[in-house]
Image (tube, rainbow, N blue to C red; front, side):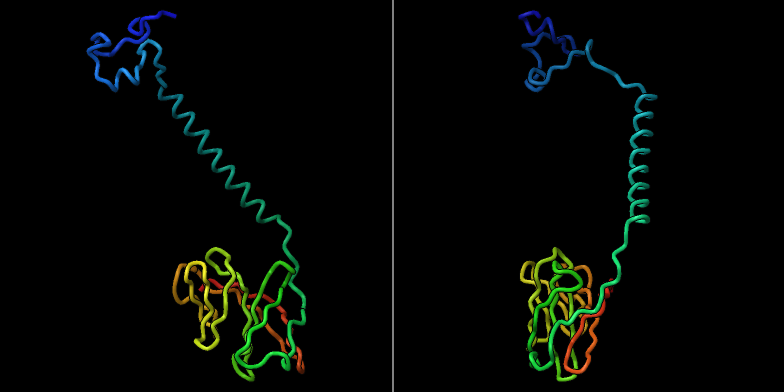
Length: 181
């Protein structure tokens, strides 16, 4: 390898290295070693890359069709009406142990339950019963206590509603309704 940089790198305009702009001295290109990509090779690359993206999307679609679906959640005892005064909230898990939920007794004859995970980034939401809201402290999301609808902040959709069934004095969770509006 020659010691003189001018022997290795030839500027496109033919001027000596000392007369070249600083950027060209820092980023020298050897025209003799420059590799040109043919149009056909570039088109082949684009077709293969696009095909790979399409194959990936097809794989994802196929996985969603054959993925094992969770069986519908069963019935689970979550509270007793005697232990839940009006205006109070209780936490429970449903349908699995890793799914936190909130049960709120809004009135003597009215209960609501929602997933406790905010629909924005899954932060834990907190009930504000006196103001009729559910708050997400992470990014100031606000949900309506009566409906679970997102009222303010970044949450994109309402909280999933936990379907309830009252039998005598016992409150059971019987299903989950994920809502988009």
